[in-house]
Structures are given as structure tokens and as C-alpha cells.
Image (cartoon, rainbow, N blue to C red):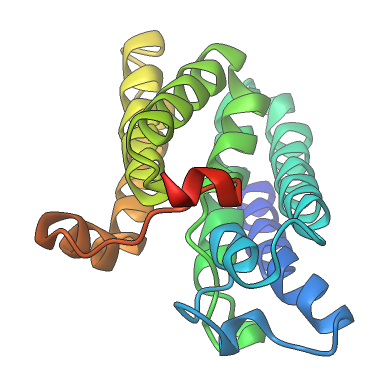
Length: 207
């Protein structure tokens, strides 16, 4: 069983190196990491390029995650560990997205990857995380706060629904902690009151 696990880990990590924001900004003869926060994520891409290309960034990051999860599912299903394999693939693609060796270890924060993993493993957790994210953003306009809250909801959802399944619980907690770690600077800014808000329209920005 160790060989399928290693293939899942390696495949997931390498797929994670395919960063949507970097790919799309490169097509624009630019690098999103040279702007704003320097982060290769959806939020920084949107801040600097607006809606142009944002959907493509989202699709690339979701598709690579779905592929990583599918590999884990197919390889570990024969051992009765389909969901565990799916989650393992998701954790590894998130690691590759956050710390991409092929991109100088300058990646994103893995929120889209996390949502995609939840969609693959259990739609109820995906729905919970999405509701928490959009509710937090709607009231505060802090994308980072919504992401942090959704990450916590992600782990709580899986721990509640899969109580007793050590692998699912442990891997979900790892993904949540990883997301919180990647948002450590945002957390400091939120506590200091210096975090930037994001508005989807110019009208909202003026309010």
C-alpha cells in the first residue's frame, strides 16, 4: 500500500505546482507575484488584474485539485481507503500550491484547493465552508477573514461528520492549520486593524 500512497503524494504535490494565478498572469506577460502582496493566489490576482482572467485562475486551481483527489481515490480505493486517498491527494496538492518547488516556493494560500477538496470528499463540508466564507465576507469585506473562518469550519465539519476516522480528521486538521499558517500575516493585520478590504464594485468601495 505504500507505493500507491507515495504516488498520490508525489502526484498531488506536482499538480499543486501548476498555479492558476501564475499561469494566467504569465499569459499576460506578467507575474502576479511582482504585485501587491506578492502572493500567487486568487485574491492578489483579482486585486491587481480585476475580473479579467480570474475565472480561469479559479478553474485551473480547482481542476488540478480535482485531479489530485481523483488519483488518491483511484489508487487507494482497492484498499478500502477511497475517501482517505481523496483527502490525502487534497492535502498534497495544497502543499504544492502553497510551497511550489518549481516556482521557487512562492505560491498561494490554498483556499480554492481546500474548497475543491471538500467538494470531492463531502459536499456538506464544502457547503458549510462556502456559507461561512461568504457570510464573513459579506459582513466585513475582508476576504482573509472569510478564508480563515472557512478554514476553521472545514476542519470542524470533517471532524464532526467523520468522528472516529483518524485519517480524515487528521488530514482535515492539517489542511486547516496549513491555511491558517499561510494567513498568519493577514491575521496580524486583522488584529492591528490594517488589513485591506476588497469590494466587488466601485460603488461598494465608496460606501
